[in-house]
Image (tube, rainbow, N blue to C red; front, side, top):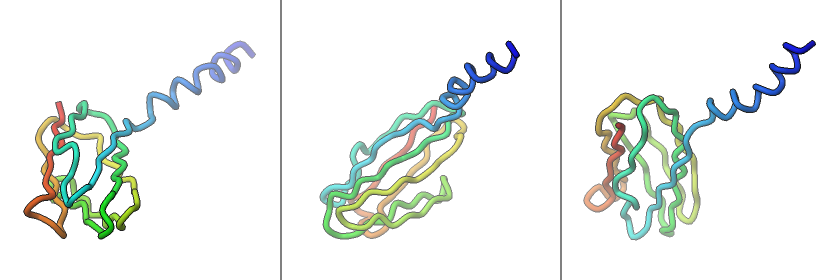
Length: 106
């Protein structure tokens, strides 16, 4: 019975350790902010992208193997990782000249 009680006490801690790190990314005036995000290696990430522009934008990264259209004045989550150390570039495909960023994994 004591083992069962101990297991119940540890469940929240186990669940918290498995929860992804949540980071925010904003699109405004066809630019990402922040343009550089730092992420610890080996962690899963829930990237919440908020598009403050009235037009859609596509978050795209060939290195991360992710593509997602974010409607204007909307937000969406993109799940990543766990990632190995390195630099992972991303762009806004609809405005490649201005919408650029990088995720730095350390």
